[in-house]
Image (cartoon, rainbow, N blue to C red):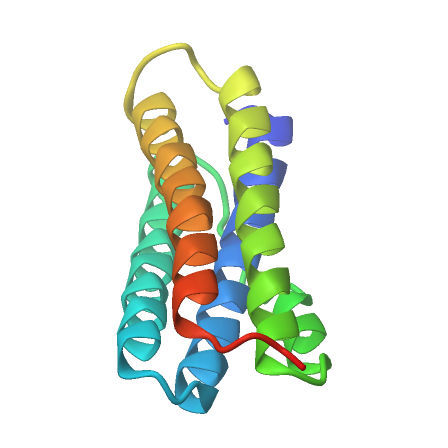
Length: 142
């Protein structure tokens, strides 16, 4: 495996682990059941990404990182649920961009390419849906 690709795949893996933690904490804090279910669904998707990325790295000759990125702590440090949800959306955008960077150095076809393309699309869709859900479900701040 190209060392640059392994490095960025491991960065994505660490980031997805942090996303799982952030989503778990947020889901426990929101009062709206529909938003909680959305966050729990996103958490499940992030958990699948962790598993899939680790397997993808291993199957292609790399070594999956065991680390967790710093994102969950950054989310938890914010004072309001709305601010934490906004940072979560920005984090999803960051992962989509990093996934697209990985695509640029990945083989042009095959399992790595296919997985990264689907992952980037899922994160972009979650960003848009998540923003719409936050606007719809959270009362305006005073």
